[in-house]
Amino acid sequence: MLHTTPYSESSVVVKVFTRQLGLRSYIIKGVRGRGGRVKQNLLQPLSSLDMVVYDNPRTELNYIKELSPRHSDTLALSSNQAITHSLCFFMTEVLYKALREAEPMPALFDYIDEINTQTLTQSSNQAISHLPISFLLTVARHLGIEPLDNYSSREPLFDLQEGRFVSAPTETTLSPDLSALLHQYLSSFHSLSLPLTPFHSSPDDRTALINALLNYYHLHLSGFSHFHSHEILHTILK
Image (cartoon, rainbow, N blue to C red; front, side, top):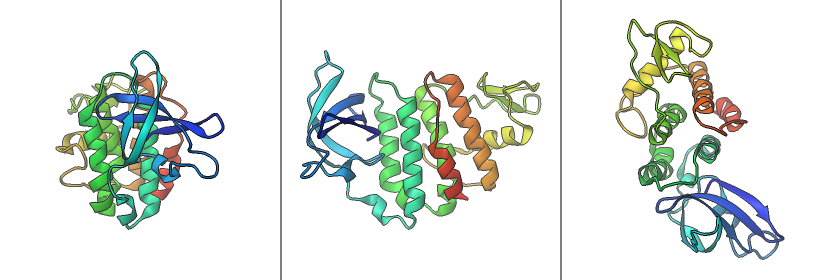
């Protein structure tokens, strides 16, 4: 579940990322008002649902016939609700602004599902602090805009516009220290979730790199702008 918008007196239009159909928009009836037949907690950011839907390819807006949670409330098992919910809002906003209604992306769906069922509930706070950067890099990989890790002593500066490390500074290159940190993340992520051996980086460094990667998304994806949830996330993760 990525986004909800009120529709008529008691319905909502939802934007959902599905494993079989990709990104889709649906109407859910009977959500708003008293006696709504759909519980509001099912529509929270990044909620994982089983759905029976009508999918007429000739119309952009179909209906959801039935929906239910795919898993038990795994986030309730987390030791820090503030962190998990802030991360969910952050990841949801990234997906909502980055994904387009196109072909299914089952590998990306499975990665997000793994975050919901395992990463957010079973990882240490130190590992969780790496998740926003890992998430941005992994989603970029699935979207085909992953930064090229060609870091070397001759090309030590990452250029956000070029998507690679370059030799000379420009208006869109990161600082030497931030470029080196990005290279460290890129070379350390052997899995699709968290680095196998988390390394030390300060909260301020991670904040700066998250901001840089969001700017990278803005440069490489049309419509990716007016991002807000990272501001709360920065405060929570400090």
